[in-house]
Length: 179
Image 1 (tube, helix red, strand yellow):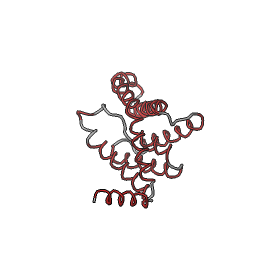
Image 2: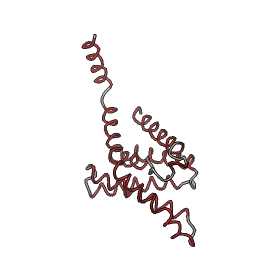
Image 3: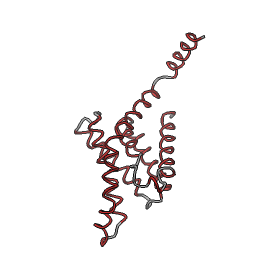
Image 4: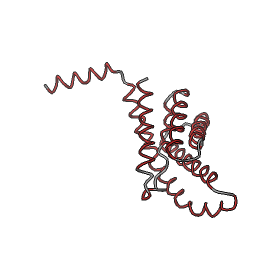
């Protein structure tokens, strides 16, 4: 339960940072959706039930705070979650190169879905040409930084899984050495 609460707080922190700081006009279109590497991490490192519940909750909160049409973020995150599950059945997704491709394709998928929902049929190609540079930049940035985000989350997850007794012994041994 402690781990679940920590991931809820992590997702809420990412959502708040993403909708406030990264939503500023100066940074608009520069950064990709930082919940995408989190969703990929959740599927790769947590149980199906826990990861799906966290993904669903994160998508709902993101829908509420982002101003996107309700259900858009939930559906995107759930499809990414299902896609990671499907791909991991056929390929080893633990390598950083494959995770880089997985995060980049997920960011590209999210941008494509948002583009389809935000344009009317007559202005599709004009809207695509306006956003193409930002999409290419976000996809490239996601390919470079996404695996590092997943690696950081994996390291934090490994530290959370260690038993509290072992942490207490380590702290006591540090205390006796430095005292």
